[in-house]
Image (cartoon, rainbow, N blue to C red; front, side):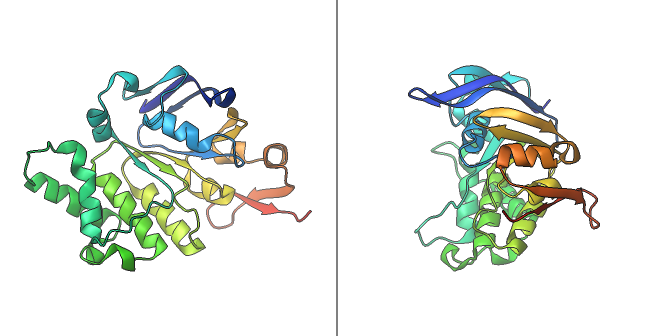
Length: 254
């Protein structure tokens, strides 16, 4: 397995945010995390990526307990793409992606040909090579998200975590970003709001409610009318899409 979590729990003061979550993710799989606001998606994602320490339980990535892995070494294995990351600094696209090489370089090391190749390859994989010398400030929202994914790829990770990477993007850029992620030869765990996008792009889906897993499996087994009504408190009809055969959710007005 690529990522394994065992009985993860975490909270703030007396409020438990993530409750006894266990999961496993296969090598090369795209796992979607869905759930209402406040269900614990972002917190779970940060626990899995090692950005938060659990109160109980542990996470293993490629067979190693990440609590025992130095931060710099872990950053060579995993990369995290947060939602709406921004900077006011006037830098180029390539400068932003170069930051992804930080875990591979010491304070005194020079810029190597391996670093150069990793950055160029990351830009190429997300289709941003033609804009590499363009200012960050001139990019659209979708282009910025692709640059952040490129920066993550420049780390040369084996596991990619993404926290609602399509948030505030138009539908064209939402599909473009998730299609890019889907084509990467990586294990990906992505938190999403849009159930139809999760159905289209994820191999498996985990549904969270109040910090706990309430459903897990392939999109066609998880995304049922009963689950949507119970967890998301909306009425919906679910059918197979004529375009990709996966579940397509039609929400009913109240």
